[in-house]
Image (cartoon, rainbow, N blue to C red):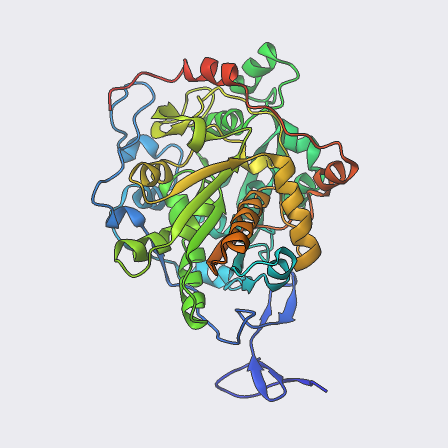
Length: 488
């Protein structure tokens, strides 16, 4: 019979002993206390990375700079200072390869990091595939997703600068709840504009943000000029991330004690998320595996970049050669259907223009349940990497994604958020191809969060009322016609 004891060993203080073997215990500040190995396929422990990785440093062709929204000239650091903390601006433009993670941030990361790398053996068995499927699971964070990886450092740097309040947008609510969580730890005020469709689809995300002390508004709102303008044109607007960004930016620009935080798209956000991939490289090395295929969902791109960028570094060195595949919603396919051009990051045209794959800054996607993937553009750095040929992209409709989510939940036990169901569906597609070809590929999947607050979406799927929302070519053409004409 297995036994569990607390070790008093000085070398391993607070360790758990199982049949005489040491197992790490993590007490997540009241969120959870449990014993587990960092990697479920063996007991090898790894450390939290001490540095974030900046892919820009290793690219021979650098991405083009953002442009000022009024002059269309390259943005200077001082142009960004009304919105962002100084350290975040430095990280946004740096060419340094590695950035040290502050000890105060690592201390918070310890609440849930390192996150587990799990082999999906039961899903493999269900699919009868020779492929070996692994997923890096970020749903163990207090907010239930990968978003605290950047929320914590963003709030930390703002707190260090003496900022009193931060504002932001959120789609599904994962980013808003993560920022609210981080603000509660560092004592900052937090105000969130949540895309209206998700605000009503996911009421418990709103309550989660409020529990951590945030003020939450449905977007578009009548609080801002940007919101009122949209409501005048369409009183029943479902909102979009572009609109919500406009509202948050408007408030930040008008208040000296307030800064803006963004949950995806920008370089410093993708930088912070690389803790995922840095951990995962060490975890896969520890079990003697090398991925043949890396899959992640993409909306703005932070989760995908967080896992894939450190692997792209190793690919550029010639050490590995995986296929890297982004998966986006068929109803909001910026990488697969958008144009690669300079466009505003928000609907009102208040933010700098970024060179990215875009559907047009005033594109309002249909209210699919993967609310975090309803952004009109892709992260400029991901767009650049895609143009360089280091990755590929596909799109999948939401009914196929939820079908995959049900199979995953009933085999692996975890109910995924609607966003990573896109990665799950793509993984199942590849695993079935392996079954047909006999290939035993190693597939690594980004599992960016759980779906405990998204059960209304599952209810609709299980009742048969979830439908695939059409991608309207005319709607895209109309939106793309308004993309600024900028000579790059």
